[in-house]
Length: 216
Image 1 (cartoon, one colour):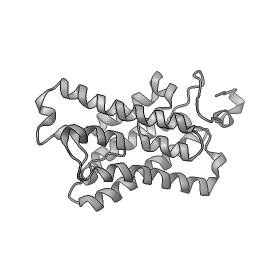
Image 2: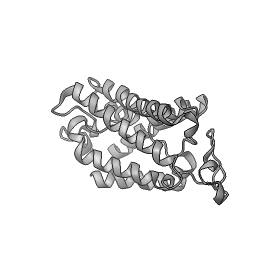
Image 3: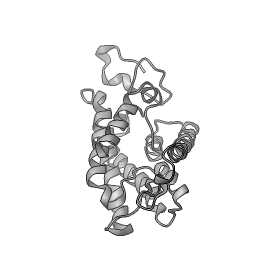
């Protein structure tokens, strides 16, 4: 499952839609880049709405295809729930994995020699987290994803973990990155920057490879 989800994330990031939108599947990611000044408030709000609606629609479609098995007690619409470490441990784990993910995304996407591999790094982390971290917190990293599963599953008791922890982890990573390298070191909000597509963000991606004539 980890490999399948990691590959799915990677394919989406490098797809034409992912290169067009910046491949934000996660409101916590969008919120972080808004905090970094790369996304206009209206765009950030619409991204968050689209991510939430897309997640809910995905669960509804999945429920319509396999039918009852998705709602079985052992599956429960793949709701993200704390493991043996309990709610507090799950909260800490979610902060930790999102902190690492955003740290890697910021470092890779703002380094000329690494920028094109950002999607591979992100997909690799998703695969690793699902394989190794999921028993601790359910491996959400995404408020929209957890909400989408919680709706049909009725799993409300610990949803607060997955609403609060991912943004906190990513914002902490962004704060540390800015303190170490400065706000100017964040050049765009796209995970995969396709220079043939119009960029709606406050973009300075061209600075990474001026010798190649890269434009935003």
